[in-house]
Length: 355
Image (cartoon, rainbow, N blue to C red; front, side, top):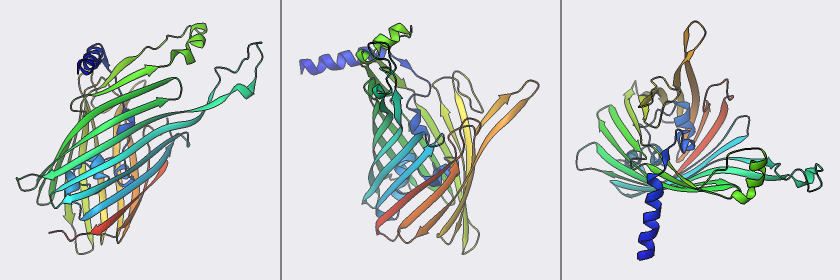
């Protein structure tokens, strides 16, 4: 027990000396599922199933299956960066669910040229080694309907592992809390990300780069704790049935962050507001056509200001218990990275009739 208390004391003493980092753990904001990405991540109040455990665990209780498994693979920056996700949700009772998911964002096969020159001053390309830089998140979610009709609550715990080959590693943890309220055709969702703040403890192997950094007059990084500030996600959606064949779901959402000034529509050092919208047209619950718009930002030109908008589109097919979704989207301004083709799949087991 004394050793445990000592470790806890050391950890929290490091936390007090740490700083909130802008864009910390930002790989978790990219989004999971082609359906969500084609709607500019406007699914906080209208998603169900395995992917809902990522967006809003409170909404997973409304799925009409016992178990759903989902997976996604996407590539960005002309295939340089790869994003992968796999997750599952299990309906333990008619009013509660549990889920688990793994997310990876990484860049592989990076040449390490630190030892390119041998001890005799000769360039030896055989000394080049390849390494990977990757970020992992392991998420465990829980959702439950409350005693208030239409209201459900959810939470998720996440473990973070960030690996920079032999040079550095980070370990972190954090919690999210969410809720969903349904009334008639309307749904209201909220997810308070990193509500306790998420801590990443960084450990550097200085022996692997210290000599080169000193020769090139670079700053030597030291072990530290990085803090991810809380972030509030909000969404309001409406499900409208046009006729026996067609229905439409539309959502207006916004991401509110507090970790420093960002390049978003409403930006300041204190608070940032990043709105987005999405729409989905459903034909007989078989074919889905989707579109969205987000990443609004004001770009200052020489004599005027311009509004930057990032559109996205996608389609989906639902056949029995199998779903496949496609999205054409991006993770930033098209001038920085080209649009990517994204696919995701889901499969449901033991389909239930909704009461």
